Length: 277
Image 1: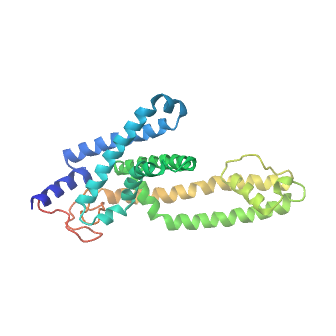
Image 2: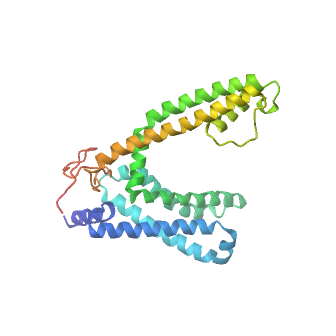
Image 3: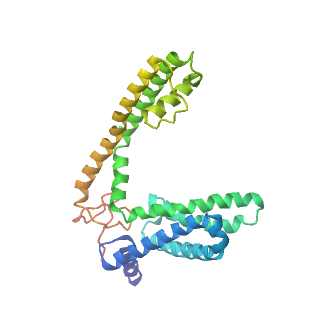
């Protein structure tokens, strides 16, 4: 019974931000994440690495140990640990600590291992995704993107068809007299660059008809760019209205949040949210 009370208390501290201790833990973890990301970024510079390499090593292992303890605690207080381990933030938490430990086992495999270690060091930047836990707007954007994925997929499919058609037309118009439009794939590449208003300028139409079509594609591009913005914005507004009735409580069984303020059971797995401590 005492062990259960301790687990419930630790769960409240590390998963929820409605209590003073929970807020303090979140702020402390936020500072640690920011400092660890800054350390990784500075470590990638040869000049800083040459001067402060030993300090970076100590800081890296310090952050790794702290994040490891945090990860193990989250698994311990969750009644179904695999639910958290396979969740988005659970995978991010694992990626934040795994590369440092893997460098121990790969450091003795010769010169090729150093390339792998360098890649693993880059993976530590995944820690920045842990910041999403503390930014309601970031989580809101994530949910809006997920909710609008079907509309965005249809939109991208339509844009793909459009650039293929435009590329084929420009190949017919410019292909005979312009080396830049030597094939339909090259013309499609030009259509994508022009439609997105990037305009590298490495391929340009020379004929009057081609230039007229280019102007039309540029104008269409401005309208197309606004479409996904409107889709995501609409979903974010809907999500904001829903979030007004939600709190930061996290289910002990499935490690999911987003429950209503008056919720007694988890809407995802049915587990009881407020257990007796």
